[in-house]
Structures are given as C-alpha cells and as structure tokens.
Image: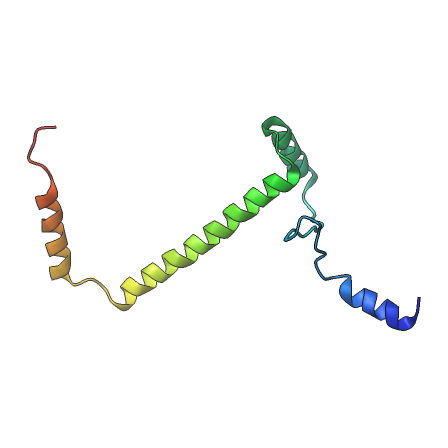
Length: 104
C-alpha cells in the first residue's frame, strides 16, 4: 500500500460507513458491564435487539432534550414579556364561565 493510500485510508476511517440498509451507522460504545447485561436481559425479555433498544433510548433522549429546549424558550418568552394582571384575571374569569353549572 502506498503512503498516499494509507493517508486516504486514515482520513476515511473515521467517516460513517453506509450499510446496505442505508442511513444506518455502526459505532462502538462503552458501557458499564452491569448496564450492558441489564440491557441484554431486558432485550431478551422483550424480544428486541440491542440496536433497537439503544435506538429507542437515543430517540427518547433526543426528544427529551428538544422538549427541554422548548420549555426554556417558553419560560424566556414569559420572562421577556410577562402576562399583565388584567390579562390573567380575564383568562381566569373566562375559564370559570366555561364550567358547567350542572351537578356532577
């Protein structure tokens, strides 16, 4: 192998490899042994592959982060432009009026 080929191989070794399934990247991850075996056991019980379980966990984590960012923006919006007491009172009264007078 020529030095030029070795350089190219070194540079591309870190790039994700496309599988024949498309859009899937394999990677290696380190987990504490106890966690690994707990995941393995749960996967066996639920008939999941480790990849499927880790994919679900990653998607949940990403959703949680996105929701946290949206919550932070929501709070920032109210800190930047807080509700006026008059608006709050009007919404409160409108909410009360929407309740049925029926006996529950």
